[in-house]
Image 1 (cartoon, helix red, strand yellow):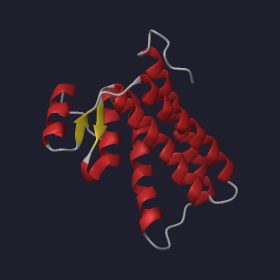
Image 2: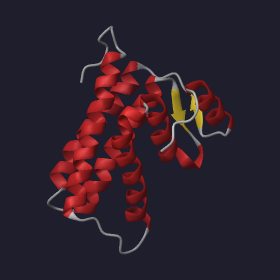
Image 3: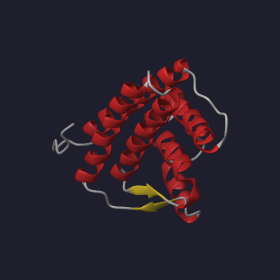
Amino acid sequence: MEKKMTFDKFVSEYLSRGLMQKQKGSAADVEKLLVRSTKDLKTAKANLKIDEGIAYSVAYLAMLRAGRAFMLLKGFRPSDGYQHKTVVEFVHQVLGDEYGTIIGHFDRMRRKRNLFTYEIDISVSFKEAENALHSAETFVNVIVEYVKREDPQGRFKF
């Protein structure tokens, strides 16, 4: 992933292309998404030995919800037909290359989850699902810690 433009230019471009919209989110909305994201991690872990594909998909969903919470914290939400990709790109734009590896995992998981959901005969191995869960746990923790740092009033109760 490339990070070539400033945040303001990114926002301007994505708003004008209809890829995201401004949205004033409450602390409660951000918290609900992050609590749900944490629950998704537990669900993915519980399903790991039952169904690797479902575990993988739910681990990805945990990342997506955390990414959407992150966007909402910053006053935006994805729109149009590229919502998942927009979330990945927004998070990368804000967090930067320091988190490029984990955001790269998020993007690869986005594409694999899409194939698993819509294509026939796409499988997910136990190791892939296990790695996905680890990546999701790391990503969600990064987002939760970022949100906590942005919340000096201590509104969030995770």
